[in-house]
Image 1 (cartoon, helix red, strand yellow):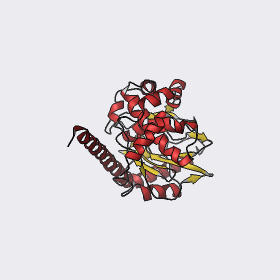
Image 2 (tube, rainbow, N blue to C red):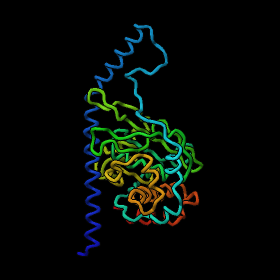
Image 3 (cartoon, rainbow, N blue to C red):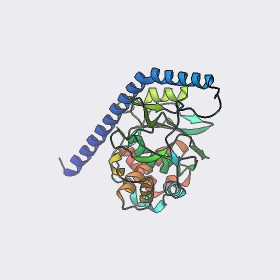
Image 4 (cartoon, rainbow, N blue to C red):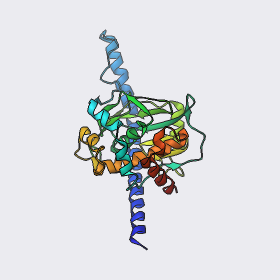
Length: 306
């Protein structure tokens, strides 16, 4: 067996192990959240009763209300992550990509007559923290963002405090597709549980339950999960959050413009693959779909199908 073949097999094994670890961690968190749900409801009810009794029933957010643990995103960070130069994309291509979206046989996923990209994650999740970077880079090629905020993964999880972005409250506008991004839990704990945040609509919950399990993905229930137009699904991060360890959001975003940086090689390369998958859903529009970087991503996407 050649060293090249062994290298590919080792890369696939590492990617599969990383996705399995992500799924186990997500399952553990879901169990913890379920066991703590009753306690959270009691806290909310008691809090509302106290507010009524004390005559302070107004529109302010109570301590028990779901609240994202986010901060305003500096303009420079937003610009760096949403306007990665085409030259960087073309230079990086898809070299080093080890995990790609998998094609599925499913009804088209649409919204308002456009292909829909559905993302489901949580703010505490370090793998979600990693994957949001290429997701934002890819989607920025199809439209514009408002309301993107900064956040970080949980302080007590693996790869603690991984700097990232949050889709909670963010809006994406595009002529080519729609995007629905949900962060189901914050990165803040109450009585040992990460507090709930976004609630999935029934239709999106059904997509998650149906396609986030074998044979569509390696392991059931992992996050982050994405469904791209009913054509592809992803579960887990496409690269290890370890790459971002010790980096600020500004440093991560700035590195995306340097094709020689390890961060650009991981984030932009995986963004090229995601872009190629989205292009299949949009009928290869806009023009970025024909760029050298995205075409390299398309080749990696086709090669990586199981």
